[in-house]
Length: 422
Image (cartoon, rainbow, N blue to C red; front, side, top):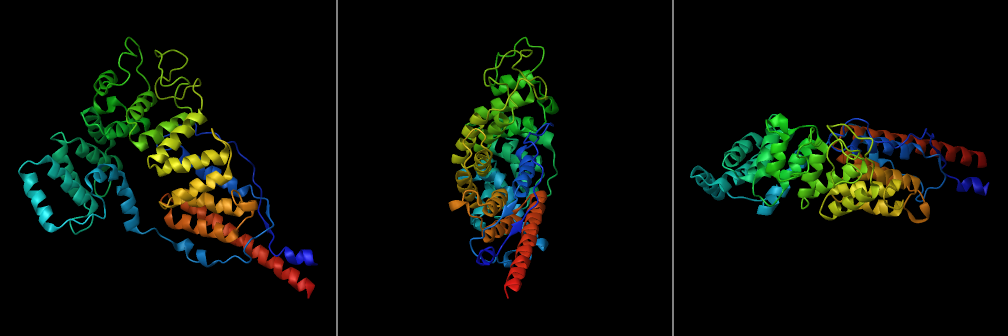
């Protein structure tokens, strides 16, 4: 009987079939991990068979009372959408919390009208961030960015391209025009190399130089990448190869290092990259297809994720945690994964919160591997509140509901045991 009393909680989860952890077979536009990790996250959750031990007694459900009706604040979503502009504005001491007085704004207007390119660019940032004592106005920002971009201001060219690439605010999405501005920015003498990273991303996501009326061979010459290595070749290098070389050139931009790591992890580059052979050899990817002669390089990917995370990439921090979770290129280490996931949550990173919730329930990475239901509920609730991707939010809601059902079963079992002992 005493043994039965100790087993106050007994939760039972249904085991699911373990599917293989293969990458997507289509072109991985954007980050191929987004879909794979949502799926692999479900596998981690559903692989639970039994949790026989709870470390803090009855779990509180107050965290999840309103989770099903939660809607992310519009303000928060807008701010996150503008985070991509921080690499440009931070160098000038401007961000979304900067206070600018009306006299300064008036002076910038006067200077811009007198032909100051920098003033036009700063006005674009002010209207974009809503620092003009009003809400963000992407349309006005785009006009000021364009005024500076047409006069050769490289940062304005990248900023205008970003507005068009994502269609922020009332600015319509026009990725080909955006790529033209990225190309101009990358072709300039700027030393920031953000233009190279953005141009590389556009190529990675399916655009080509021909889409903007530029021959690939001419673009390689202007951008100073792969010069001479494809002379006389019938086929140009693939978009992946071009993107990877642009990412390498933008080695001071953490987003570029992050994307390069993805390409190594998913086998999107030849085995001997960056050494390139003439197209037609076994180590070359021609066109946009995935070559059977390419292979995943988990060790190189982990090295690059580590580098990018040290440079400030939250996504690389998260991906490095997943490398430790699945033992890809690094030792499988749940405690290290938990540490990295926790670091990512400082920036309200919902996918990391999702994994922390599942790890807490499994007891992975915890002292003595003891599961903790309260922590699991807390992190799943946080995931719901901070999810930007609707699919991720929906899965966190389902996981939290499943956990609550398991707790109800435990309460019922506990009541039956106590009744039996009466």
